[in-house]
Length: 348
Image (cartoon, rainbow, N blue to C red; front, side, top):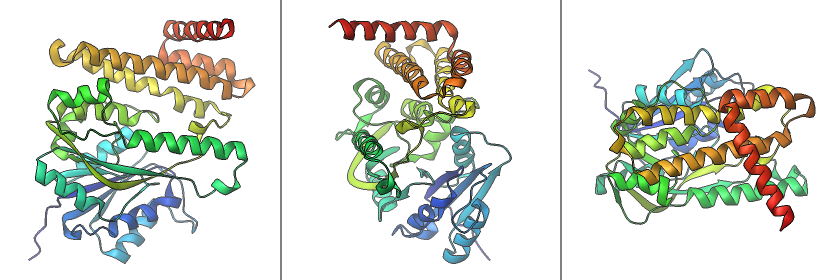
């Protein structure tokens, strides 16, 4: 008789048009020295239409991987694209492991990552364990122009610096959220961490269904930090983060669909503030709320500044969309601040 062995760690991989990198991602899990029977892989196809270099879609890649490695891997498919928050929600809800490892499909784990993270969780009783990450330049880096290479390098350096901000001392209870929002003594990326599934599920209870393609980690980690009891970090590189040459590096925005993806950051803050307003007033410190509001204003400022990359013929419609997402008066307020900053710089 076959008895189902409950996994200790669920590696959750959302996929949306990242099929060229999916097999590398999966192979990095297969190569772990953590006992295979104690690991499961959850892949969520978020209505992806991409293919790898052989023309294989997500399902075919997963099937080929399972046939080759005989690993415990399960595939779930969304009929329509729901965004990264909902793809991860599906993965977490379907997962059976005690701990969750979030792995983006264009990234990959370093050898020994799962063992190191799990051992730290077991030895410390932490429900969040953070490791270090390495930012990797894209395969087409050498074909980029000198200016583009400089931009991508700068992005990689900044991402790696941010990814490796970690508290050397354990954080307990309310100090975890304060550390993330106010003190900034550790990062809010979901990848490069091991998270207790129960803590993640409790966090998801605070988050309504939301579609966004920006700041997906922000809303999830805010409530994970809110629900967590103990955070620790380890001095080991566990994650390879792939730097892409996308909108974040300053690519021209030539479609309103691209622009809506950028503006969708507003949905994160709308959902975040709505849930905060429902919770008891003493749930959060004033300085935590100030930090979140500051981040919200900073994100709108970035959205407005990205208008410079929008194709001229789309600018009017793009600004209308910006106002729909963020609110007309809020957009005007931040536009005035940016203008005042520019006048101040010019006169100095």
